[in-house]
Amino acid sequence: MLSENNCITKLLGLKDIFVNSVEETENYLCINIETVPKPHLCPCCRQPTSYIHDYRMQKIKDLSFRGKFVYLLLKKRRYICKQCGKRFNEKFSFLPKYHRMAQRVYENILRLLRTNYSMKSVADLFNVSVSTVSRVFDITSYSLYRLPEIISIDEFKGNADGEKYQVIITNPKNKKVLDVLPNRQKTQLFDYFKQFDNRKNVKLVIMDMWQSYYDVCKTMFPNAKIIIDKYHYIRQVYWALDRVRKRVQKAFGKHKRIYFKHSKKLLFAPYEKLNSDNRQALRIMLSQHFDLQEAWQLKELFATVRKSTDYETGRKNLRDFILTAQECNIPEFKDCITAFSNWSKSILNSFDYPYTNGFTEGINNKIKVLKRNAYGYRNFKRFRNRILHICA
Image 1 (spheres, rainbow, N blue to C red):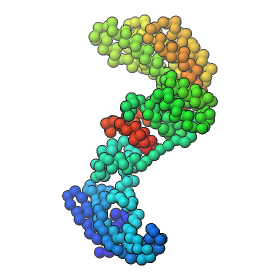
Image 2: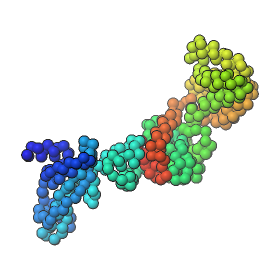
Image 3: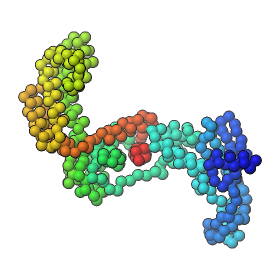
Image 4: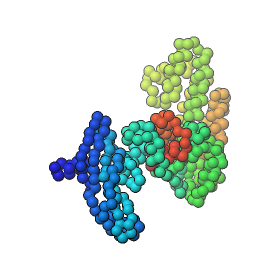
């Protein structure tokens, strides 16, 4: 019998307890346990005592086992101090004071909240309410005290606390999420970065072509170089090419229009990576309209800009591209030329450094999954902590 009790005790993973009985039903296990008696220190006079005043029974939620909810029926002792008369409960390593769930339940709730599980799913797994899970999670807190030398700034659609967009700040070098801000307004960004006393140590800031970010970073980080993320300026060319395709195909019949729509990847793919059949199909597409042919040639010319290895080479190649695009005078490329002209210095900085917003965009995708599983977040503070908790 003693050996059987030891096996059950080891299975429970709790120290200094022994099992009196186990009751099993269809949905749950109720394990009657008791601790090994030992002297306790009086919380008032700090004198040891072994005198037991009375016993009380407490039902405690534990981790599930064999697909059934587990309850520990704990026989608690209340001690009395013979020196000062103080009555107090014995202490347990597995049960926090004034709590009705085992310590490991709290730990596993926080562990599971590091995944994309919704709070409702976590609550169902641990047989607790959603408000309990929220209350357990709300004890977590994340703060940023110093900025690294390289930071990345981007926004995502969070819809929390009435704001459509939230801002995420990351360290692209160490692949770490630093903080999440409630909105992308200039005042919010200025107030946030103002609190850091090492702002002058920031050397690089990676961002998209959002003017507010640029204004804030130029003021807050006087020694930093601004880098436009490669994806955000490269897509300008592909957007322009696609707009030309859409304009050209509108003049075609239904069959050819559908063909152009389904074959647009031929326009976007690098010519050297196409096989002979695809090259022939591409030539047929380009022969349908002169503007489409010139737009595609501009896209191919931009490949030399993308392959630039340093600032000076990139400046020459970008200048040639802008001049060629201006000579072509294709309306759809007007916005692209304007963007490249206005942001040329920050675009060229990207050729001297290997950092992009790739890590940040990956975190944004993870946030989308988190939002979808939870059907959105209204409380920004909890939303922020959940993002930082997952990415910690």
